[in-house]
Length: 167
Image (cartoon, rainbow, N blue to C red; front, side):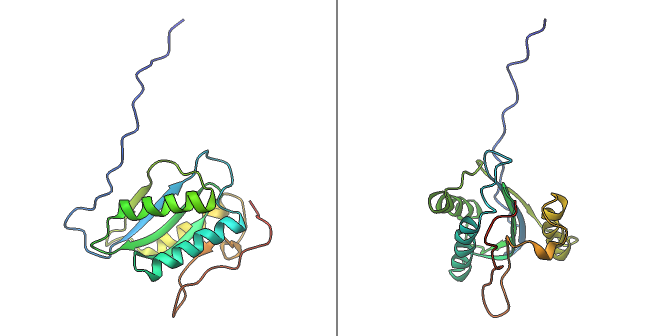
């Protein structure tokens, strides 16, 4: 019987520093996952409210500009731009730390980011994000998902949260 290998590759830390040629205010598609995967930590009305309030606060403080945030049971997706002088890693890490304390969320280390390039439409990426709960079988129509946040014209906004979690 063969012994299984013990020298598995280790997960490397992802680089999050945009190159100098990336324009200020570029839009990023960011995914942040919880641990353990599969456990609903985010689609709980009280937790979602903490997340949405923190997004609004940071939006008003100009830490970032979130265009769309969609919560899933064990991860979230957002379209976000950072000020040029802001360090994306520091902003996201501090936000995750706050949410861990205030919301009791257990995050995976790190996060995934992808800068939207000129040929990528933010509307297409937003539609992809909005369809995530549909693809997961949680709802039939993306407009029915209450765990989404978008700024409204003239100020911040949030979806009305349900009394009981659907996921």
